[in-house]
Amino acid sequence: AETYYKQASLVLDPAKTEIRYNSEWSLPLGSMGMIQLAAKYTVARMMERNDFHDRFKAGTPISVHEFLYPLMQGYDSVALKSDLELGGTDQKFNLLMGRHLQAEYGQEPQCILTMPLLEGLDGVDKMSKSKNNYIGIAEEPNTMFAKVLSISDTLMWRWYTLLSFKSMAEIEALKKEVEGGRNPKDAKVMLAKEITARFHSAAAADAAEQDFINRSKGGVPDDIPEVSLSGAPMGIGALLKSAGLAPSTTEAGRLIDGGGVRVDSSVVSDKGLKLEAGTYVVQVGKRKFAKVTLA
Image 1: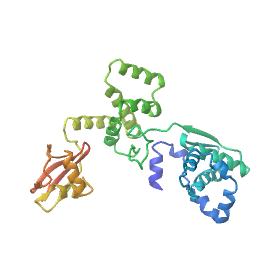
Image 2 (image 1 turned 30 degrees about the horizontal axis):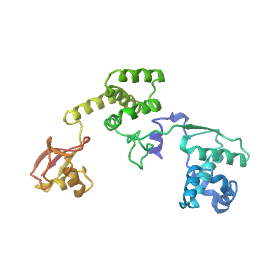
Image 3 (image 1 turned 180 degrees about the vertical axis):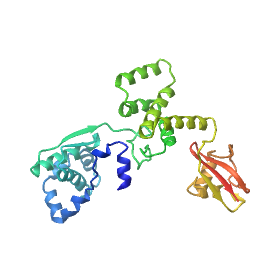
Image 4 (image 1 turned 120 degrees about the vertical axis):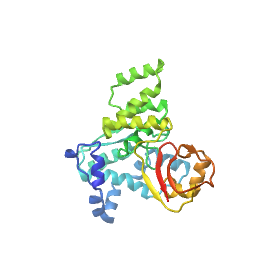
């Protein structure tokens, strides 16, 4: 619970925020309560949801428990006596379910406010942890900054519209500058610094920018983890795994084949490389570093 409060406080005023768990009211429902809740909505109405309608039409199976999710989310509004519920445009059906159930339980239906979906780092799917195309609000400033810099120039303007505190007039003016010849990277750096500063600080954003510049030039970040290992001489694959730079020796080999591994700034091309006792700066990809002392 403490972690949830800490992360929520990054975007919400802690003094005005209360975190509730829906198990508080969903567990006491029991089997009878669930049947009574399910009786307040028809199958015909449920099939109006786009994905249910399309899957039924295509002959794709729909499990009964999938009908329960929007019902339970709608019941949250009943339990909280909600006045307003926020959600992405993909949640419109579930938000309206809350309005319907509130009316069924004799409450005034809530207002709903939907927001456009934010495309993730890939610029295709909505930002999602399950798709690994996301930036976590609790991520380190250097990682946050670098991830924003990794998005496409086209996606950048979508992110400006949905994430920046700049006015639409300011964004349009900046876009015209880029269209007139200004390097789009300048605009992307501005966005990366704005987002990083919001969740950390202006100083952290400046430091993250410098860290990114150092890495772009092949430099080593100022603050990298230090790892001590024993067993010299050690194969490079085993070292990468033991230092936490690769999940397995097989993956380490794949990274080496792709030219993504450096030892003391030199690209490793030999998967059979063995390192003697000593201290090495090991890099995997653009953002993973470790100072490894091997004994």
